[in-house]
Image (cartoon, rainbow, N blue to C red; front, side, top):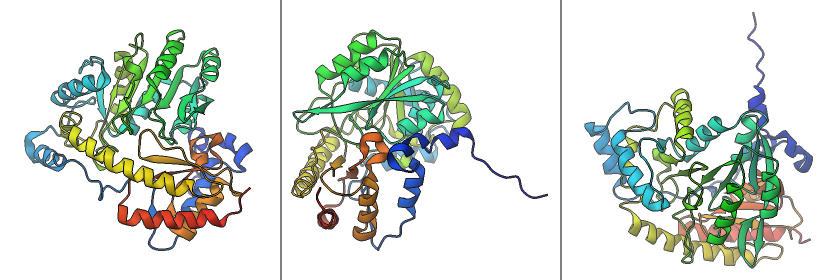
Length: 406
């Protein structure tokens, strides 16, 4: 008997975001596979993520991991995490967020922030639920909502006088439809936008008048530029019991390879997330958990230095790209990304991404990955070795300049 014919489940098929085909000719994953399969010249530079060799983790990272692996740490921790680690992380995160976090009820450590987002959505979204997501936003947000059978209600980001914000009128209209959930990244990924304190207060006011939960991905909340302060939604009055915040040291502290993150929020949601973790990944990597007590507590000088280095790279990149006809970019307020606007160039985001890979040896994220209005944009991570980055910018300029200006 021949092997059974495989058909992907409807959940997996929804990851294709087939509804995007109306604006992008093909489903999202078809476009991505075309980009992934395109041969590139050697060497090539993947600028969708940071160079962690140029920007390594803090000095305490490897010794903390090695000490735990040598016998001082648990191998099989509870699903939420090692109790001693949770106690210390709760203290650190409480200081960061400005709210008191109960380590037993309102916190769990996760295998990276992505696992925190996944288990939270698995706990909250039922098939048919409406979920409000900004456009643009983190590239897995809409896909994950669709995977769990939810319906995405996209609201646009707005820019006024250089400040980015959610469209509050669109958010209010979306909340009137009684969605289950609002979720967004802050600082925004891909744009790097950091919302003002006033704007976060406005979002909180709308949520207080609704019966809607919020998930805020604050992975880059410590990586902000130009002396900005960062406002946490969870710290706003009336947000207790409404907001789940995901955090972690993966990016700012270059600890992606250790797969550690944290989720902070209402005890009832954390209980459900623990149940999901028990059938998905079981736990955050046990030895790596022992890095988390150092995170926030022991690395402020390290983060301050990193902000200075990244801000210099950001400014060089913005100047180089804004010098090109048909191209514009707003300096990011946080994160390590720039969201490059190519509306003045006669080429699609897919065509530009393909050309940058094949002709400049550069891998970028085309704008359609972040939302339907992402056409004519691409995202780059400027956290690169300076000796390679200057040359990469020149190659990027050459490819972009080769396209006709509209």
